[in-house]
Image 1 (tube, helix red, strand yellow):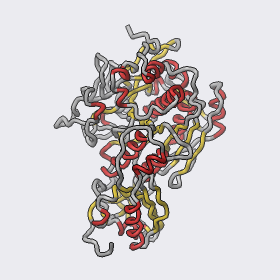
Image 2 (tube, rainbow, N blue to C red):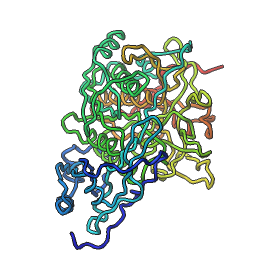
Image 3 (cartoon, rainbow, N blue to C red):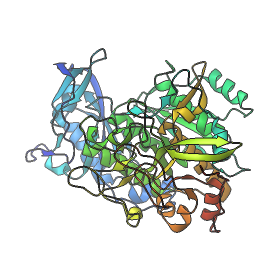
Image 4 (cartoon, helix red, strand yellow):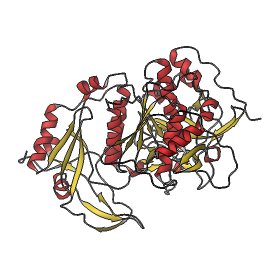
Length: 521
């Protein structure tokens, strides 16, 4: 391979300069690791075993050998190969890795924060690896995502609910607990304390579920402050665990980088020891902050999940139609915008006597949070949305694209979830609560049906699926509005769940009317 023609840019690998001051060069002799992902035959949704998936869709031995040769010629170590994930981990000095992939790497300093290294420009591979390598991650370590949770403002006296109360209002199936299921939760920081979990579940009269911390790329269960990532971690565990207390919860901790995020998701999806049937993700960032290779690699991991009957629920964001980008345009959050992600939007929920009396799009006004949603500028309209009347983007040019979200649930911190974080009782909202809520519903459905429901979108966008969802017809998230009718909108998707009706519909029976709701006068 040393006689190859000049290096070829990896498609979609171009990194823009960070918005922070460049303060120098990283130590070229420092040890570093990258994850190289390889091509493979992309699957279709189904219920393959993890073993059968690896045999049919894993990395080819010849491609792995090409990477091993490439590494050896450049003094790098190929110290871990995972054919199911189609990944190879390469280790060496930072300088050697940067040279191997043609990377320009610098150190950047955010105000008041720690310096991090970032790549500017394309990564490259020799011509023999062009098309073989689909992504290289680890040279750029800028933080890639934010947790999508919102603590309620102090002094607020609006309604607050325990997660089981929300599940009851949405008519989640009774008589099942998620027993026999494993739910994966992805975390890019923070941690949980066992005594907090014990106290929280005891206060609800619920047995403490099995919670296991799983380390990916050195990520650790590292609790710190309640208003930091701990709030996300505890919200995810306490919502999912209190609604489906019989499920085993595997919490995959990983660094907040594109390498960490992608590696954690692909590790969970292909985890043949724990066999999660659902993956819950409450972290993300605007599409404009991701590289194309990272988005496509994450979507590939979600497609693998769909092929193995694993449902992936993802928070759609808490900053309305702008997704927090101050350029005057509409943006959607990734990875919620990935076609194989079940994107979870937000509502404001009012419950009385266990019944829903009103539900509208979550929008607490400028600076206070609103459910994310809109039209992707990266992904085309997927087949399951072809008949859903997805409107074009409100941005100039009116580009069509994947509509976000697919479904919704209570996310307004003013009607939020009572949780315990670092010894404190708090009320928290955000679409971060909706992803684990839907994940809990999925494990209940899986137990009740006796097999994983898997990739839900084609069913949800069908007549039977839509009849088991409650359309949200009032409110807006900024640039997009809900309206009358039973169709999709870019604020709340197809609507919020009617759990028992969804179970009946998935079993092939005519959906019931769902949980009782009293409409606003």
